[in-house]
Amino acid sequence: QQQVKQSPQSLIVQKGGISIINCAYENTAFDYFPWYQQFPGKGPALLIAIRPDVSEKKEGRFTISFNKSAKQFSLHIMDSQPGDSATYFCAASILNSGYALNFGKGTSLLVTP
Amino acid sequence: EPEVTQTPSHQVTQMGQEVILRCVPISNHLYFYWYRQILGQKVEFLVSFYNNEISEKSEIFDDQFSVERPDGSNFTLKIRSTKLEDSAMYFCASEVTSGKRKTQYFGPGTRLLVL
Image 1 (cartoon, rainbow over the protein chains, first blue to last red):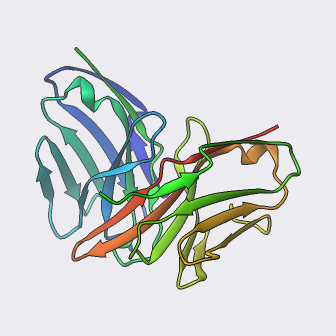
Image 2: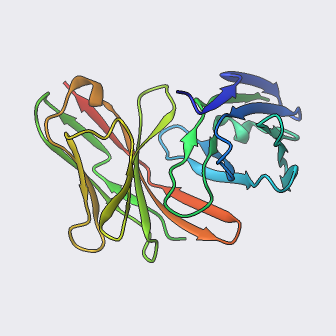
């Protein structure tokens, strides 16, 4: 059972454009939704996270939009830069310590100069 | 900044052999995890560990797998009899929760190749 569905699988955006990655979850017990960024040969690194008590969270050029009723959330990267080229994973979990992250399948983002 | 370290970075083994993957979590973190990522696929949860016990494990974590924290700093994943399908990148993570934010810090991974 795929608990977190992510799309698109890959994305090409021009420098300065907006990158949008979408995720949907099934388990209503999830209350913590992080996005991780992974560069080739490295482990995933936390980028930004949101809880369902807010509909939007912004940190710099990165924004998460959250729709609790639809059980969907998305990552927007504004003014995308070539250095943003990486694989992005959405995840869902329970905020309390000890609960695993349930990852989506990942989106490979390429930002062209 | 503190980081999770993993050794070795690469391991090649023959099918049926035992392997031990090692991790040093960030000190003062209490929860530890192993995940794996088969090439080109998503990161999958294997097991979580707290207070010297397994707290949760996935279907993947069968009897061939075991974890321990032998000396209070290292955190190891042992695969007793490796199979071809165990070939993957294995990530260790340690976790800190502060208020409304939970951060799992991932190590750089060990790439395991089973021949």
